Length: 551
Image 1 (cartoon, helix red, strand yellow):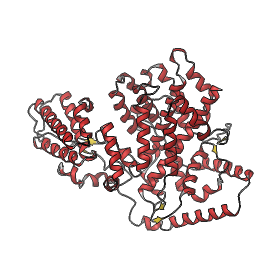
Image 2 (image 1 turned 90 degrees about the horizontal axis):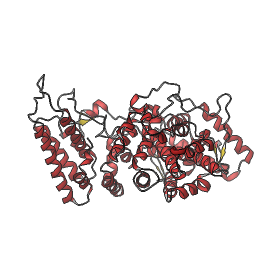
Image 3 (image 1 turned 90 degrees about the vertical axis):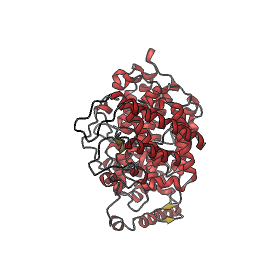
Image 4 (image 1 turned 30 degrees about the vertical axis):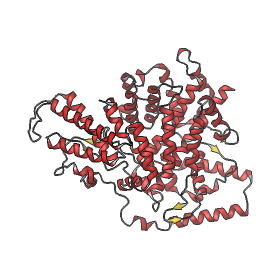
């Protein structure tokens, strides 16, 4: 059951008018209690053989209660949160089992209190959350974690709204299905489940969710494009584009194809962010709640309100062990000193173009040798793998034996000079939104590093961005790639490469192992940089192939 079918009463919860929210909560309260009455006598929870209940009625009620649980924790309005807690308490008092949280907060890596504190201390982020809730009827865990950086989140949500909900070349249900296909390439069940729900809500055919083979041929034809962009985008050619544009009755138009590649690249990169921040399932989705009786003694609805539940002990969100930070004390100062020395070298002399090219090739080669957990088997579940084909096709380093991938020089094809105008021409105004999102992620700074204030971080941000593009074979002629080895240590490189290439293998240990003295908000900022740099790299190869086809 999709609780959003009762559109009016739920939508009113996003109103800034408190009386509208109160009226909506009264209707929801009545609806819940009515469903409980419809189910008949409540079985004794202590009974060893409770009487059979109508599964469909029970399922509908459970979906409703899971949604109320989500609102009790994540609605941006305190009055709604309090009323939802009271409603759950009343349901529990009449003998109906209520859902409880699984996990502890939006992220497995970041303490819940830090994430929730953001909206309490920042009026701007509170306003952004209220706007998002009014449009979507929810605050997903990705948005809550991105809340550390309100300027970026605002741009991200605006882009997503335009891409998924506004007028465009693709139908609404196709947009969500393509999002499912893209997220499935990295086995990202969080994004797959999110868009399965949205796909059904906008009228998508449930049969398509049985597997890619059940979808129309036109969508199935995107399988090749999806896997190449996700794992080896440098292999994309104008022939791939021609195959999609000249498929007789299954052909895509150029405008549709631009919409497709933006969706694919966005959800490949968003999967990286999801894994890189350890995003937990949303409360009202599978894996975010459970109706099972807790093994520990008693579960009270008051735990929802005060956050002191034993769940924290069961699924705890603990940071590094005590002493680990002091063990790495001084790493920030060392990094700042390296930045200072590199700046002084800039002022004294500049390397020749030949030397810069050599340093790029060296860094590109070395990036292939950074060891990640790629060799470990990671078999996707059927639930996810059914949305894509060719399970064996994954990322391989550029220079496998017998394979040579030429470098893509930004001088020859760049987002600013080529990609931006192509997107804007075929998908009006969207190039501007994408450019704004790229720029905000790249330029975002609070001039801080851990506890240090007034720090110019532009050199470090550029090193991270250019290292990711270097892994994709993209070269900036005016950048000295020798800086990368100075600024990015090995554990950080392992994290970057895993997150960009095989994000499904990211672990909390890997997240904790880099920049141990930095704030969680700074690590989320790094993940935004990685996500946007990856998206732009994939997009460049896709747009270059389309440009070559057009010319």
